[in-house]
Length: 114
Image (cartoon, rainbow, N blue to C red; front, side, top):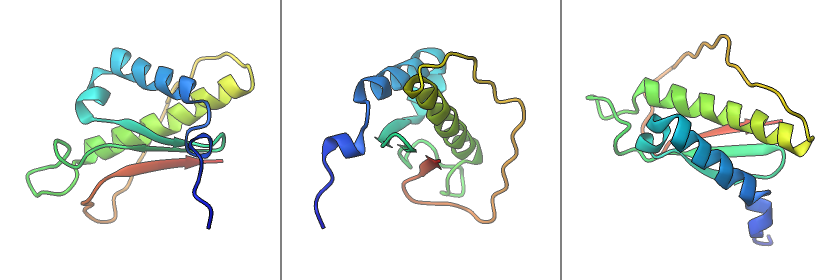
């Protein structure tokens, strides 16, 4: 199987860098959590954060960190898709719910895919 090129892994790397920097400037907690953009293909967007610093006293991932990572990932994909289509607009999360079926450990990542 051929190895993916950097363009396949990070489509529009300039926008990804701009988005990550905007998160850090406007949502400082995202930088403290270590949120990083791992992949953007134009349709799929993946973010990660380290396990260390995002754990609860039970040594599993803190639900608030997971929720924040999921929210930033969904929001980030919409932000990138608006740019892809040369559209403006304000992205607002008006309502959100999440249910955790079991404790999560290991290196967390979130995926938003069209």
